[in-house]
Image (cartoon, rainbow, N blue to C red; front, side):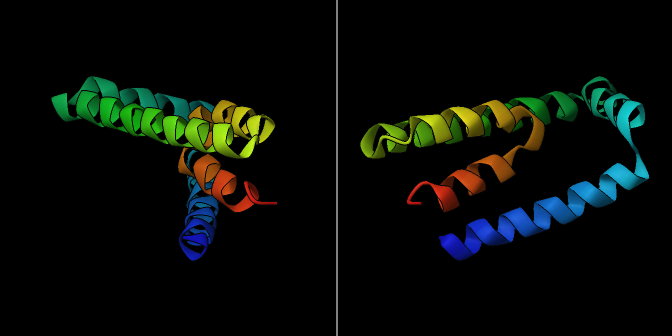
Length: 97
């Protein structure tokens, strides 16, 4: 699992850096909103994305309750809407530290 978490972090950081260079700030926001407007699948994408985030938050909460890592849980949960899966991967890597 640790290797998977590291892999997710590396891939997501690389893709995020590439995407930011291709479409910074306002352009990225417009493209993100365009996904919702264009097709019914855009709406499915959003609900799936946020549904998966909710499941990850519940997993992190359960783990935090077991380990007492509430601060790490709170920080990763707050970062999740911005950095998505990177947040859960970071939680996995830091939770035992």
